[in-house]
Image 1 (cartoon, rainbow, N blue to C red):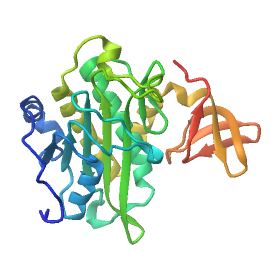
Image 2: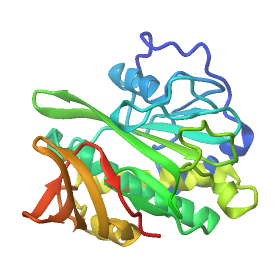
Image 3: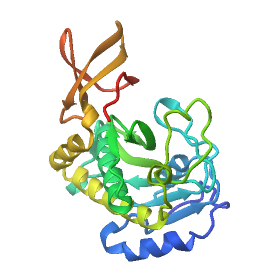
Image 4: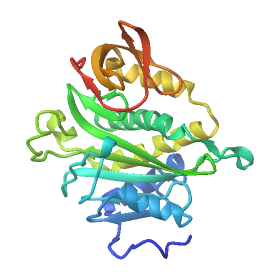
Length: 284
């Protein structure tokens, strides 16, 4: 693997609690986490993973940071990433289909939904917390955001060359900034007990590996069904969003097979593909 263009000077040994859990889960996670780079502090794990991918890193290459100084979420928002409280992970996905055919351009948006299922399943299995997915990329519990996903693809000749799947999880309690304190939460804060990051990381990578396999073979229907079951707010919740002709309002009516949020409005059923959606009354 060529990594000359990537500054790995700040990378260090993976903490033993994470390394031990990954060793135990190797049969299920496959290549995901086999090539791994750990940073006590990084600017953005997605940026590092993207540079590794551009330098030829194989699928499953994983970047982990204990803290991020430039973490970001959807729509360019800052992702609060203080040390010692979270799990910040980015993985390289190369989803060429059999025979070398490149994956279609719309894949990153759909992969966000599959990654959401992977994240929710991992959190539920390891902690028992019945966290839910909020379209398109958040994991929530009782209205508080516990984790988020950011997928970023690199295109070549109208096809996706690789996708970086970034996942940030609020594991431990933290003093969140005032502008997000009312809607941010953590796994330990909701559970009232410690959470072991090692098993959580291992199960997350195992589920992400399965999600990428499904995406590679265009076998996503079962995953989308599971997403719908994990996202009660995607049915019957009042929402608002900004459309070209102004603020629109409606009630969520599920998810279509392209990953669009369906909304019933006074003009009929509409598909919301991107942009900011305000959940007027999040279902609990």
